[in-house]
Image (cartoon, rainbow, N blue to C red; front, side, top):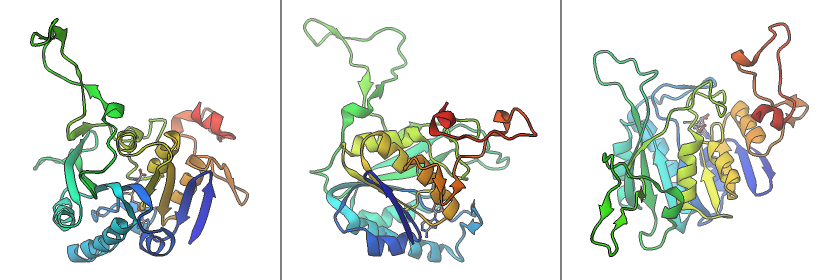
Length: 289
Ligand SMILES: C[S@@+](CC[C@H](N)C(=O)[O-])C[C@H]1O[C@@H](n2cnc3c(N)ncnc32)[C@H](O)[C@@H]1O
């Protein structure tokens, strides 16, 4: 296991279960976002996301779920994802242990979905849970969206005196539309299941305040820690793969070299102007430009 840290942000490179057991204090975390391997055969840099049986996968998940519940503060929130076929098992397992307040559908556009003889999957489920339904953070004002009424005219509330236009802002419902992260998007990193910044922004804004601690035990490209940092929260990210951890070291700790190795992202094909000489980013400013 390796630890990298800077300014309230910690990156653990190693196995999530071992690190949760040995390195994270009980009742210490305000928000947990978990996006584990889904047991659907993705290739995480050579590590296959497929267990021998469904039972093996679920038993592995139940081990880290139990640990996460210990790490969460009494006022804390948990957002947990997995594939559509396994989320019902998570739901039933969690129901007796924590309050499930929302069953969220992250819905996205169709590109990449090619099923011809059945209905291709266009969403991923997220369970939003809290330990205490009478005492948890939910900053509704921070995440308001425009209510879509279907009306072209401004609706007036005549029950008010004098009559006033209806408030058109509302707390989002449980169907969230965000595009998946694509190669040409500025936030893209080299990872098969990167989650969008916008998705994590809604979750972290709603369920934490500045200075709170956000934990992500399967960090991948460290989107959670990256957004936590942007919003002035603290973060703990765990990731088993060395290359993915380096993405976190660059994205969250803003370190562009590690033991002499350049951590700049590969330039995208459309950014390589001259095929003889590949452009590499020297600084974060250049990368973000
Ligand atoms: C679905 S991805 C997470 C993607 C992430 N949410 C993002 O936005 O990039 C799951 C990650 O878990 C990592 N992983 C798999 N087994 C692990 C383990 N035992 N401990 C820690 N990380 C693990 C994989 O390498 C992969 O990057």
